[in-house]
Length: 385
Ligand code: C5P
Image (cartoon, rainbow, N blue to C red; front, top):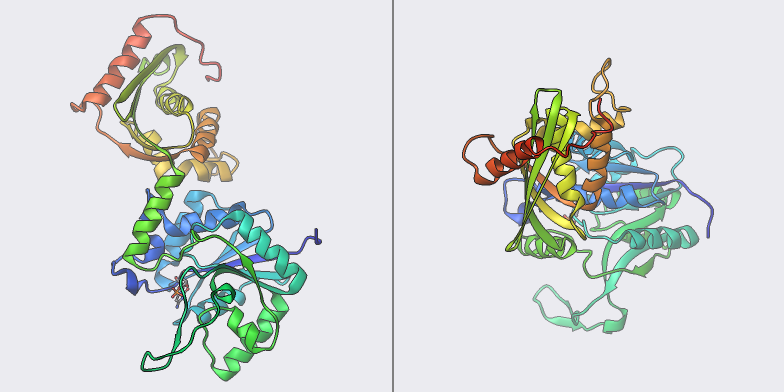
């Protein structure tokens, strides 16, 4: 095992996304409710060898991306900088922002969200030994080199032909020299390794996986959706509600879970609690009984619950030592901790529904919660107040 080096990941995400043919930039398109760039950042946030992350994006999307970073509670993102006209210019903008103490630079396309964390680690490890390493897969197709008239002039032996992906990892000093030269000569490449190759240095390829696709065109988006679906096995719909007679007072929760043609109802009453606690607890109890990893669409009539999660308030409170503002602590910290833990396991999209507005399942949850209070057998809400 080589000694600990300081590694900075640069995620270029400043492309125009023209080939996707959508108004919204492809790095911000959503897969199962979450932006592509979020999936990508998550991988580097979770990779132990990565110390800091720099994202490169278009000038107008910098504030939006900071919002996303805060919402998700990413801790390693140290800078979001403005990109350039070509990918290489964007990567260079990222390089200009790396720390003094950076030993290795990892470049990874913002739109390659399915890279395996182990592959990032492996590529870093080889780069530490050899100076430069890129991830790739052997071509499945026969590759032909053609001239300007599309006449085939060469058929390279397939065993030696690789499709190069990212991450691409380089010793910082080597990469800086390569960029210096490219900036001088005006050479623009489609990846970083070509700049190193042009300097006469060796670059090694580490074998990765075919699912590390770059999402470029609408077809790629369809493949990406299938990958995300495969990762998340069960799709569950959940309705939740909390009720309290007096606030604080005796309270209860109700939940309805729908999975395929199966239906499950949950409820319980508590002797002394609050309405908000019951709203959050309803969500927790419903998620706690799920087996395996699930993709959940959750409907609650509590703005408190839905906004706290979807607007990223809870993650912000947690990042601020559970302070809601300069003076006040957040309420119900015990429950939010439990819920955040569950949200790491399942992918949950929260939706607000108007209460008492004839939504059958929401009405059913309300009924279950109220009946739970009436029926007695009330438990202690141990963490209240
Ligand atoms: O254009 P290409 O498909 O090579 O883009 C790969 C990655 O580089 C994408 O994440 C894209 O957003 C980014 N890029 C960039 N600046 C550019 C062009 C592309 O950061 N000018």
